[in-house]
Amino acid sequence: MDPDRSKLRLRTLTAQGMGRVAAPYGDIVPPIHPSSTFERAPDGSFPAGRIYSRADNPTYDGPEAVIAALEGAAAAILLGSGQAAAAAVFQALAPGDRVLLPRNMYWGLRNWITGFMGAWGLAADFYDNASLDDLAARMKAKPRLVWIETPANPTWEVTDIAAACEIARAAGATVAVDSTCATPVLTRPLALGADIVMHSATKYLNGHSDVVAGALACAKDDELWQRIRQVRASGGAVLGPFEAWLLARGMRTLHVRVRAACDNAQAIAARFARHPKVSQVLYPGLESHPGHAIAARQMQGGFGAMLSLRIAGGETAAKSFTARLAVFKRATSLGSVESLAEHRASVEGPNTMCPPDLVRLSIGIEDADDLIADIEQALG
Image (tube, rainbow, N blue to C red):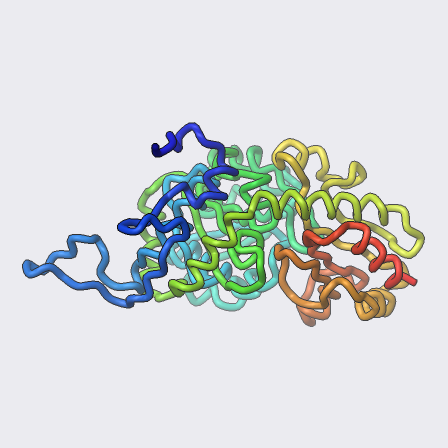
């Protein structure tokens, strides 16, 4: 008997890939559809609804349905990377549109926007991530799009999504939220008033450091959303079928991975909050964090698995600390089962806004005691 999926919780639907069983063999694991093109009927129509994989592929159906369900979205689409997903939103805007961006945000997207967006005829302004007053003041310029990233990488400021959406809505602006680090397990931006939510699916959604992917989900299938879909189809920023299949597989364990990593991050943040060789722990789960109360309200069941340590002794001490880590892997990325560390300013380069004493930690699902011991020995 097929269950009534409307009565199942999201954790169950995610673990079962929406509970779908593939015809005609009853596959529990969905098949991969590697075909780049699909046959027309004799009358020239496409009875199966597929034309060409640059526009769409059947392997996308499963993970897109899961993401839409997780976000409470009208629709979701996969793209070739998180950067491609974010860029598609901006590319769907019209020349002359203004966008409002947080000062602290993923540096790769910030660099793309400041370096290339002018060629699209778009204008940008920046607001203080945690200041609703600053956001409201900058709405006087009538932006078409407000971009939110919360918690904001790599200093983890928290933006009040619901309040920001009210401000934006009053000015007629669309709100898009980069919720990569919060994940839909913890925060559902569309339920808080956002119009679009974006994920670098490379990170927590996949969770295994073996896929590069992006995802977008929308509150309404409106004109802007159709332009975003067209950007994907025309621009070719698509995901390969095998990568889409790996993403679907990874999402089946999303809830247990995120919960375990959050527990580890909370334990690590608490342990080093008063360590003499750590000048500051940046983590919304600490009551000392300026955005803790907002995070507690809009992040359900945890405060994320990303945190940063500001190392006493400055840049040299931070680099030495990173070099001495043994269990943590020194690598760029986040959201996977293994814990990663990096001296973030070195990665971002000369235009970085990151403090030079900051080490960003992506906490995985290892034993928390092993991770704590590794940090202890690296601090010396």
